[in-house]
Each structure stands twice: as C-alpha cells, then as structure tokens.
Length: 243
Image 1 (cartoon, rainbow, N blue to C red):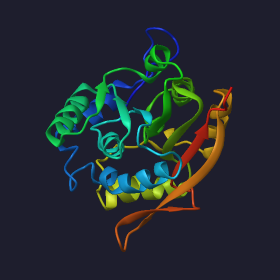
Image 2 (tube, rainbow, N blue to C red):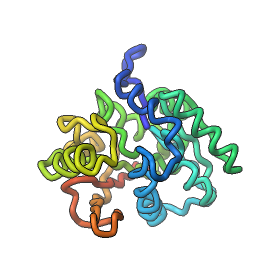
Image 3 (cartoon, rainbow, N blue to C red):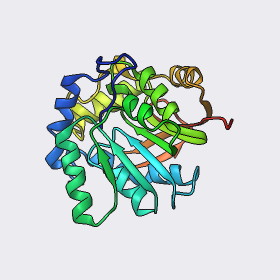
C-alpha cells in the first residue's frame, strides 16, 4: 500500500522505511486474521462507498498503493478493469499470485503514481488511493498525480486518517498498543491529514471535493461503518471537472 515519486525526476516520494514496513507484511496480507485484518474488515465498506459513486462494471480504475490487492480484486470481481500500482515488490508479488489463484483478472505494476500519471494521463474513470497519503513524504504531489491520471468528469476516492487527538488515541494507542490489531509503528501521528489540507491539495490539482464521509468503528460488534464523524478515518470523493 505504498507508492509514488515526486514531480522532480529521479527524486522519490517514498520512504524506504515505510516500504520495508509493508513489505514485511507481504506473506500475511491475505490472512483475514493477520496484521492486515483491518484492511479486510474495511474493504466491504470501501466498496459500498465506491459503488454509490460509479457503476463498476466496465469502469477503468487505477488503484494507487494497491498493496496485496484486497480492494483491487474486489473491484475487478464487480466487473471493473483494474490496474493496481505499488512500489513494494514483495507485496505486488503476493497480489499477482493471489489474483492468479483466484482467477481474477487484475493488472499490477511496480510504478509510481506520478510516473503512471505521465504515462497514462486522463486514462481512468476512477482513481482510488486508500490509506496511503499518510505514509508518503509529499502527499500533495501524490494528490496531483491522482488528478492527472483521472479523465475529465472522472472520480478520485481517497481514504486517510485525520490529525486529531481522537485519531491518535484510536489509530495508534488503541489499534497498535492496546488491541494490537496493527503492528506498532504502522502510523505516525504528524503525518495524519486534516480534511482541510486534503481539500486544499485537491483544489490545487484541479479537483473538486464532493463528499467527506467518516469511518467509525464499533468495539462491540468489531465492525466499521460509514458515519458523519470524520475525526478518525475518513473517505473523500473528488471529481475532475469535465472540459
């Protein structure tokens, strides 16, 4: 679930430590009870959000920071033409193998978001970028790449963590140290992103913010749900205006 180089040629918008962190999880990526359990639990909710934005059958989709392919496969199962990109080769290898074993047609590539945007500008109906921006050194550059890759009239969907006290307690203290559903060190609080910051980066890239929806977790049912509360996790829906 990592990607991108910056707009400067030869300068990587990727932290090697972050890449190593997620590469270490590669072999357990598809274990629904393993370290990637939160991704498996979140995926149905993400799909509901995406499917209310765009019909997936036949849609051309770029999944930026696809990781082991949990979301990429789900969108492909729904009939989309999906290209998943990531910069962690060990994780991509797992994604490719799982798709092969599952008989799901998904294309994967080890390429940065900015490079893909240059190679296939305005080529996609939908670009997704889930739980990635808080892991890259220059998230604004990644947002600009998302905008460049989507066609006019197309959609960009991002999920990330808000920089609030509540997010610190839930995503770091609770998830990494108390419940231990995530490995320690998965997140850095100062890299969390306020919705106002994300909206500003989107505007600078030519995107219009259409929706912000929170993601809430119930410890009683151990399940996620969409909500009006964006204090911890949230989803953002942008459009690139038609020409």
